[in-house]
Amino acid sequence: MQSDDKPVKPRRPKTEKVEELKTQGTPASGEAAAKPTRAPRQSKAAGEAPAAKADAPTAAPTRTPRAGGRPAASAAPAAPPAAKQPLLPPPPARLREKYLKTIVPTLMKDLGFQNTMQVPKLEKIVINVGIGREVTSSENSAKIVDAALKDITAIAGQKPIIKMSKKAIASFKLRKGQPVGIMVTLRGARMYEFFDKLVNVTLPRIRDFQGSPIASFDGRGAYQLGMREQTLFPEIEYTSVDRVRGLQINIVTTADSKENTKKLLESLGMPFAKEGAQSRPRFAIRA
Image (cartoon, one colour):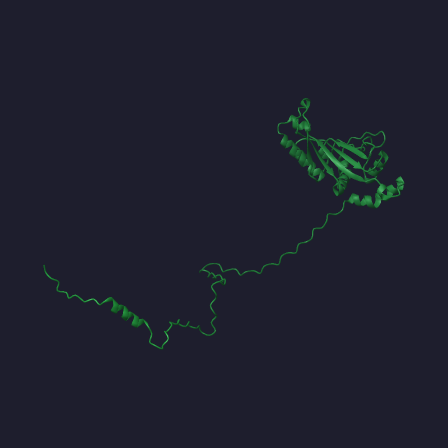
């Protein structure tokens, strides 16, 4: 075998290497170890604004318009919010004002009352419509109820309620819980407005009208008036009516006798028929 001609470098002992490293890392006696210092930050030129902090919000970069595009519209100043106008209360009913200013003093004088609280007044007006026969004889009862509700809501200006049957009657083909009528009760300003419309607009539309019947008093301050057509009222369009329905109007007052009730309604404008005359409040004048 051939021998290696490369000279072998002798190794130093480990103890000599450790002592050499210690003598190089220790500072000279009496001198403090030099601490590495950070390089100073270069200062900016005078007049230049300081850099913004990292947490401060940065302004949005402005978008440069491209060549040939439309110029950016300048931001218009925001218009001041319009001041909200306060909601005004509705005007008082005309008939109520007439009752308080004119009718009450007249009735006190005619009936011999000493206090204004004794004078009779309107308490409520109840409008009833029967739809039981229509519902039992037709398959589409929901459509009939909706049409009747729409008509009475337009007439009264108030949404009515649906009256359900309380028991089943086989001879009438009536089941329990089936709609049989629609009712609405008017009080306050709506009551006076409806009575004013009834006396001055609806009743004059009746053909050959000779006055309201005088035999419809119950003797306890109520008066009933029946009509066979809802088309008497101006809110109902005759061409949009699916079928003719009758309705009953019950006028309830605080009077305690038939004579006082009649005098109150006459002073409010109700045209009663004369003794022996035939009244027919059932046919409407149609154009």
